[in-house]
Length: 127
Image 1 (tube, rainbow, N blue to C red):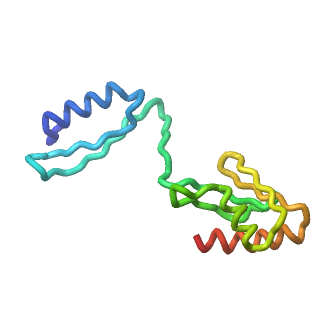
Image 2: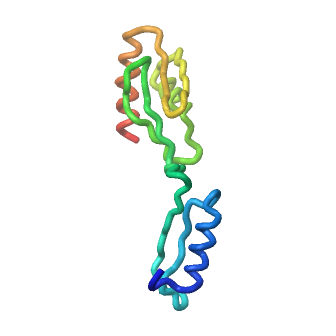
Image 3: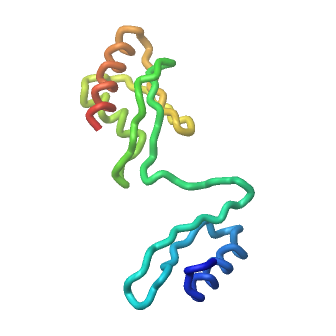
């Protein structure tokens, strides 16, 4: 650990010991006051990586047809917002299922499904 301060070496050793719950840490190298270089390191626990994206991402389907990826950027957004969007577009009987990272909109008729797909493609592209 050449070039890293004594304090940083201690932090790295502590993180390495507690890798069951710590996935990474930020330390400052060459820190001689308020100026230093941030160093981010990760501790792997059996090859398992459990990082979460900064936003939730869903694959959007109408019946069994893939429409696109729907990303929830704001904290208050929910997968159910797709249903609200379709209601605002004039679709009255919208059934929505969220299965893991899939949002499935169920349409009883083929014609309505095509119209929903077109509306949702625009919705996904504009976000």
